[in-house]
Length: 210
Image (cartoon, rainbow, N blue to C red; front, side, top):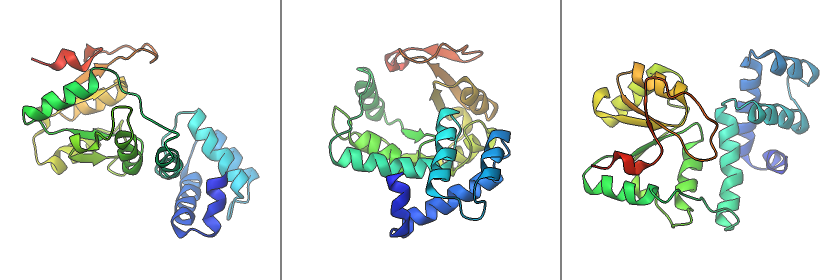
C-alpha cells in the first residue's frame, strides 16, 4: 500500500500502477471482474488496486505489473540488508562447475528481471548474479506458453535441443518440452508434491554433474 501511495510523486510507480489497472480491465477471471465492478473502474483507489493485487498473489496468478511492484519493494529490503536469499548447498558449486565447462546460464522467471537480479545479488553466499548472462521474465512471454521458450532460444542464438530447462513446475516443463527443449523437473524440500510426468526428476543440481 505504501508503495502504491508513492505513485503520486514517482512517475515510474505511477506508470506501473496504470499498467496494473490496464491488466485488471483485461483480466477475464470472474472474481477479478466482480472486484472491478465494485471499484472506480476509470481510476481505482489504491486500496481497491491493492485488493486486486493481493488476490493475484493468493491465487498464484502472474502479472507483469505486480512483479515490477514486488521488485521495487524487494529492492528496498535487499539494499537495507533486511532480506538475504537462501540457496541450497548444491546450487553455487554447480553453477561454478557449469561455467567452467563453458555452459551458458540464463534465468527465466515469472518475477521481473529487476527482481531476479536483486535475488541473486543478495544471497547468503554473496553476489552471484554474474554467473548468469541472460535474463528473461514474462515480458518475453508466459511460462506456460510454448512460444515463449522458442523466443528465448532465439535470443540465446541457439537451437532448442541444445537447451536444458529446469523448473519445479510441471506445466512449464511441458511447454518447454513442446518447444523442443530438454527438461528436468526439480523437486526441493518444502515444495508441494507434483507428478513430474514425462520429465526427468532431480532433487539436486549435483545430479546433473558428470
